[in-house]
Image (cartoon, rainbow, N blue to C red; front, top):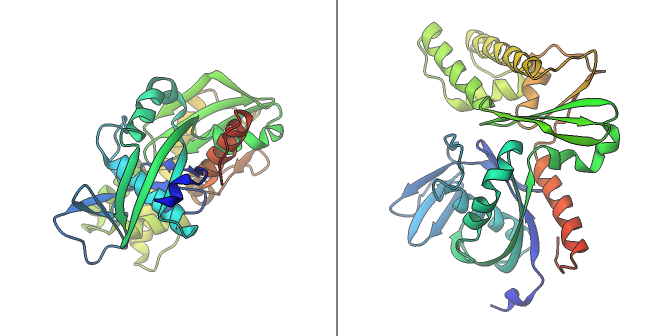
Length: 311
């Protein structure tokens, strides 16, 4: 395994509940186990003699990401995609990852142990065999990592709201400095909106609607289905966004006194279904922004420590 002699490759991974993101890829955070190789799956993983379809569903919300092996398998998929992009199947890697703002302190050590429980990973992904050595893990706070390189823009009082599939993370950044005592994590992600839309469609139209239709309306505001279906999803999304704004006000958001920044997969809902002042509300629409932030912060930290690595 001659590739293991090379410098470690820095790979950032944003382990979301809805999607896993690297700086170059995004795929649904879902896993289905099969006895044999799944024939129709877009991404397949074989590890420890078991087969998995990657990305065919979304992962159920669990507060502790180390509760099962799913995020370890999703990590392998993310690593494989990044190595394949470089034309590699063997390499040492240094991971840059994160957790919701208020969970970093409690879960940091356990998540690092989780990701390094098997230092030498051997698996098959999409028909190619991979051999990976996890040599280190850098850990950061979700949301903040995405804007750490642009803190000069956060003059005055600012509220940052990172809306993911499972959680909504809120923090204050005043004059470019994060306020540690004003960070909050709530189970108010876009999956809650998805569940409510399903319920409303069943109650009002007696229809079981595929999640892809709901997701398209939430993401773009439109879909090529009956207008009654679209209207119910839109109304549900509008109510969900109103709920987000109520929650922010409970955390003392005041548009007269501060700017509000939205990011994460749920930012598109604010864009399509919210009524906000574009002069006071900024929407960061790069869904890979957190993963890219992990990469920037980790690269800076590793260089400062004199670690030799590749990006």
